[in-house]
Length: 362
Image 1 (cartoon, rainbow, N blue to C red):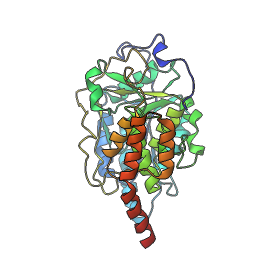
Image 2: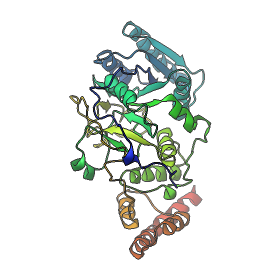
Image 3: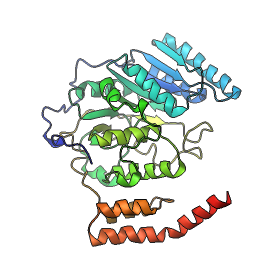
Image 4: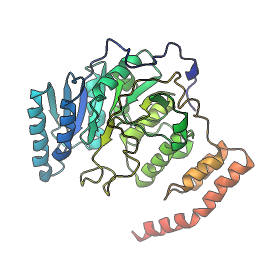
């Protein structure tokens, strides 16, 4: 259950324009790099050409997994040291390999203990020239509004919502970490660094409240549970959702991902998915802000069981076990919803049989 709070739409004195915000916050940029100097270089080039230069870059580099990582990490260090001619750079190298997720959580927690807010970038996220200025203004604009957990430069939302978006930014139930900013007190309050790596306050994907945006998080969490993986962004999304926190995201991305298809990519090693930069605009300089903190202009209604199952069917490889079936049936009372849930469960039984057979054979 989500925590009870004052309805988001009743928020008063919300900012409506970034261009009139001032004085503007000057947070550090936290940059996480590892073994991809050829991707880090264009990110640094883009930072050097910001309309407003960042005040400081705090770079974290994880320790090597094997000796083969060492020269690549060293190449990244050289690039960062050279970048000190542009702006102050603090470089933190981990003595041992922590893994991507743990390194990021520790990095953001360490920075949060020293600064009131911060901006996060990865070594494959190239920012538009307006990036630092816009994110800094967003952090200033929403600092008094404690229900806003993060602000982002990355746009990703269902196509059916686009026609209703009249402002440059919107409220969302999802965290997008491809260029985002947050406030240290809000980051530290979630205490993710002390949580288990597979943290999910809803326990399992089937318990996550389903609406037009969270339906994608539900599918992501299913595959995390299925494959016994971890993902700090999904854990953050769920932790914020459980506390009824929301996020400000743009209609057009003003960052671009260039890491898909790289052999050292954590995900999407096979190439660039069509959707990942679909909403990117190099010319975007967003200004107008939503008049309410209600996610997506009131489009956050709960999905019916029928709608959720239709979404599951479009997600190749997703199935329900008996536990998930029981949870979903307890959440939906209508005959149509229950018929859809049970029908999907029965359709997937052959999949579950094959899966158990493969487990026995391995």
